[in-house]
Image (cartoon, rainbow, N blue to C red; front, side):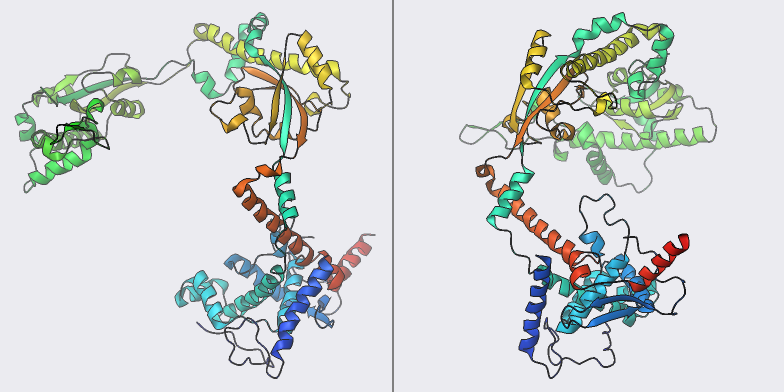
Amino acid sequence: MSQTPQKPGATTPKHHEDDLIVVPEGKSRLRYIATIGLVVFLLVIFVVADTFQSALSGGGGDQDPVYLTWTDPISKAPRQVLGSEFNATARDLGMMENFGFFRPYSAAFSDPLSPDRGRGGLEEEDVASFFVFEGIANSIGIEVSNEEHKDRLRGSFGDAEGLRRGATLARMPVERLEQIIRRCERVGKVCAQILLSVEAPDAAAIEAEWLEENPLFKFNVVTVKTDQYVDQARSEAPDDETLAAWFHERPLFEQQGLFTAQTVTADVAYVPVGEGAAYDAAALLAAYPAPEGTDLAEQASSYYTVNRATRFAVPADQQLVATVGEDGEKIIPETPKLFYELEEVQEQVDFEAPIYAAMRAWLTDLQDRRTQGEEVDFAAEAASYGLTFMAGPEGGLERSELEAQAPWGTPMIAGMLTFAQEGAFLPSVMIGSKSMAIALARAKKDREEPPFADIRDEVLEMWATSRSAEIAVETLDGVRLVLAAKPEDIEAADWRPEIDLAELQKLTSEAGYSVIERDWLGQNSVPNDDFAAATPLQRFLRGNVEMHALEAGQVAPAVSSPTSDEVFLVRMEGKKSPPIEDIGALGLLRAREMAKSDAFQAMGTKIFLGDGEWMTDTVQVRFPERDRREAAKEQGGE
């Protein structure tokens, strides 16, 4: 791969291609190494916008004005960048972001909880930060060795051809693309060296991180079963027209619960197989003989392989049958025997494989003739080939009934008939433990809504069940209204009053309810970490963000359980830190990583953001041309 050409006037490094620091000729290496420590020291000392849509647009003044100024943190010399260079670098960085060689600092180090984090694209402040750190790299002699550069290119483009394709995509020569990439690599090195100065979090920081991330919560909950309000709900039943309208507004899956079942009228021609079955295949094989040159042994082997699971499965009660060893003791196999081996069923396979092949050929012929519009007498042809034919009953059968049809019914054939098009053959010969069959979905009747009079009682029960949950919610929410005065300008759903526990217990006791205490647990926990044994209330509280966001003493609006059979009125008793002894090895590791991440985030926010503390105060990053344009715009607006 080509190498980035040296800029005119640049000092050529000697014999240090793989060094992190490349010292210009004639300069002290010790001094330059010390300079790195100095810049990190300066950064640490000073540590303790609008989306960039286009650079430079009209507005008068110079044709190529100064767009960016700052003070070099090493030499304290003033620096500046003209608009044309700023604009070109911005375009290059945007392209490098797409290639994965650059990430805007505004995306990497902005507030992680910000809803628009990283969505604004490259900002002017990102470009300014890049120029500042590139200047630092130049001042202290940071370079990227040829091997480092090649490794990075290989990782991104693969080989020279991939790099050429990348350059074509970027619409520039390979050398120019490499030059831009190397700029990003040098700046990346500077940033990495700065981040290395972040100290490992101490024990106090790790402990604080873990305690903050793992608080314990205690709740007091009033619960009521909704079924005790069903009779009251029935007494409020609306007229049939309103009830029908309510039903039709329910989710479709709820409505379909009262629909008639789908039925299929299936005509089936089958050959019995298995123990005791007999079939004369002469007529079928004569009508659909095997193609000349067919390898019968391979045909049999293929038939066994394809149909082993359905045709040659070992019965469940025989899968772990013990054998007797030489010493007379029973030997129980370690793994069940799920299928008979080919050698064990060879005779059956040799007999069935040609029949299966002939039935497939017949099925293909039937399908082709139906497609061409020919009337096919399925029953007559089946009889002529000696197959047993069963015509489906008028009105059809439901899926479970199809599955139960002996000897051809199986879950597979019932499912395929359910989804088949009306008047179509199933696409393959269906193999079961007792038959091989060809099936036709002669007629189908889809699920449909019965006359409302036929389902009125069921709909009424659905309505009463739903209404009983609403009554339970209204009843429990009334507790809040009795114990606290709701401001008129706040909706009940947004109201979280503080209610004394003793008053809550007294009122609910008088009403026949009891207050359940959910003792101290983490937000995503259930008692004893046994989710299977957890009560519906414990499951409801687990991970419920809204309830865990309450303040001590606050009571949330009453809410129905996910199954709508119970209603909860939840009061937050309190929140506390867990014992640090419970941190455990995994908790310690996670807390240490999070504390370290927080330290990196804090450092990055203060140093790398173009509008951050270090850039604006110490480096004094300014945008004179942008400021001039904005001032002119404000002045013009006035």
